[in-house]
Amino acid sequence: MRSVVLSNGLSLPALGLGTWQVTDREQMRGLVKAAYDAGYRLFDTAAAYGNEIALGRAIALSGIPREDICLSDKVWNTNRGFDAVQSACRRSLKKLKTDYLDVYLIHWPASPKLHADWEDLNAQTWRGMEALYREGLVRAIGVCNFTPRHLQALRRTAQILPMIDQIEFHPGMPQAQTAAYCAQNGIALEASSPLGNGQILQNETLLSLAAQTGRTPAQVALRWALQKNAVVLPKTTNPARLKENMDLFDFTLSDAQMRLLDELPFCGGLAIDPDEVTEFG
Ligand code: A2P
Image (cartoon, rainbow, N blue to C red; front, side, top):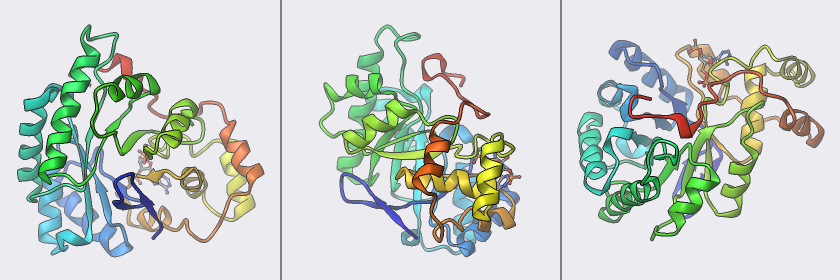
């Protein structure tokens, strides 16, 4: 499996399993075992997904050695601030039955639209993230859904720069400014909802590139994100698709094919505006 190396030297698999919307314990158990057997070594969750206990249990019951996998988690919006983020992380560690996370991320920025003190709020939460990192409870720290505006503001007070920005990233939603900012500042991009929550797969350009390459539309979309150096986190509960979504490392999209996908207009996905997200989501 190809790796992406973070600014602190930590290597992450370039492909991991997204677990949003998987909450049933038995389903999680089967999924984690099937994913591990298929070669997945990065599992991405969030406190807000409500499945940390199910994921921790599934890893333990599958007998997966902790050091064999990377676990990534996110702090929810109700736990902003220096103390709250540290308590939230400790609660998540308990639920996941582990004593460290490989990756810990702020799920959404506090936004200027909803918080008069958004810069300070993000700065204090980040200070808590830095403390967790220094303590060794988390091996890498980062953010999700931060745009250059949020990242630039954070830089003013951060002692450690975010190592990751996880954003919705797929053909039709290339978030070019954020991707460019991350590339220029040594921040690894992670692609959440890399299939646009499954909504982009009927797009004609994707279908035509799938026919040209002998791959599926999902594989073409995931390969596009990989070639943009993103860590891709597709979610599926279907064992055949788990394998399909991993089978990306023996073909390449040409520059012309990449450009076609770069230029695709929005064709499905969540497209949530980070400046509109509240405590409730
Ligand atoms: P399912 O879990 O039934 O496979 P995203 O990763 O962008 O959030 O997309 C997830 C959605 O895409 C889920 O509805 C998932 O459904 C579907 N999906 C995942 N992989 C594939 C695939 N290879 N082909 C078609 N649909 C897929």
